[in-house]
Length: 418
Image 1 (cartoon, rainbow, N blue to C red):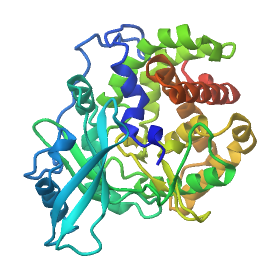
Image 2: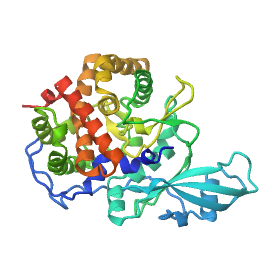
Image 3: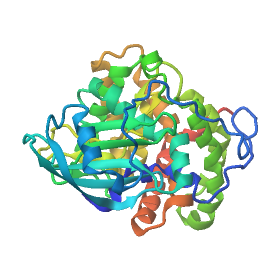
Image 4: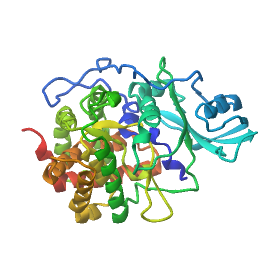
């Protein structure tokens, strides 16, 4: 498992960037002419009612994953039965500590258990730095992913996800922990820098269409009303934060901007609230939110389902958001240009096959164009506040090229109201 790419809580770029350079209190125009909220004015997140809870404390360091704690966690859903964990060896995965959370591989020694108990698990637990942990709680990333595994995973049939042996959040603090299936050595992790092949992209369009069709028109139901929508307070905080990173991007990455792109990005900042409202028009569906190659695990046999990880950015909105995020960030520019309409059509065909009605290909492609514009926030966030190692710098440059060219090719800025 390549160490630089396993921890998605550190790769949620708009959240990562929000605490790196400061500037959360900027003011400026938004789509409806209101001011951006100043520091302290942004909406506070209500607790997630009905979040999974147990009597186990949330581990805050690797030392907290004691044999007794892991035994209780694995017994809670029958993974362990009557056996016991007698020893836990915790090893950081990748850098171990991401901006919004920590990641470790736990090697387990058992006594009196069957052969089905996992030899290793991957633990995701809160960030070590208090400020970073507070941001994660405010953006509900721990809660979202824990509730995905406890409440939503079972509804998804055509998109494999890692097995979660334990997932919990603490209502009082919002901190969370997940024990996940260790995919290291079983599957090949995708590479966002290299990008997807056409065959991989085709399969990923089919799989995301199946997810979206399953939840199409049902995302307004009370059962998942806790999942943030693009016009809700979680994404409103994103819209107020991103423009503060733009000056740094211009200062350090101006060479990546094609002619006219700076003006387009300025217009996009002014329209982010409006774009979020458009992405929240019904019928909404459940979107992954971070659908990119670094979050894909590929099987040895071509054509077998691709495993998707990292659901902490799961949201409710228009399905083509995931398509736009993937196409504008994870595919080579020339490859996208050659196969773009065919891939979006493959996605649309998958929706129709899944029972979606009254949604034309033209409407789908227009939503795709709009979402591509929204997704310009990701390269700006990476280049303006997150690219602090060699690979991150390379990804920021490549994703910038892909995203900017997508927006220019599609004339996405024309979707904004004049």
